[in-house]
Length: 152
Image (cartoon, rainbow, N blue to C red):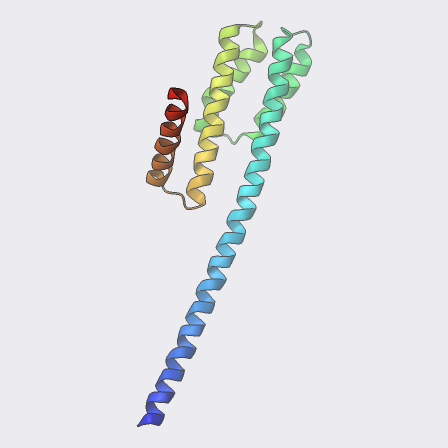
């Protein structure tokens, strides 16, 4: 009887070890993919941010070199998928490259770029497993800390 119990315990232990190993393998694979995606997306954000910065610098020169402005715009558009989400940013970018400098257009472009970057950042957090509610709690906590610093 004791031998049967001992054999069953050994069998259960072996099955548990196999299940844990399989789970660990898939978890490790998932983490590796997420790390790779996150790293690539961070590089994409930095490169896009640099190109937008170059565009804005050239735009502030009030079209001294219209060709250069259009070339930078073309490079920025290559970074963006043909998605509805980027359409407002793309329209504003096109408008800035085709019209004389306007403070209003400049500010709209900066705003649209910030919307794009914020959306990408939110998607990265979701892919990493940070829920919307956790993100909101953290945002509220950060906001409270800012308010406390302002009061001091």
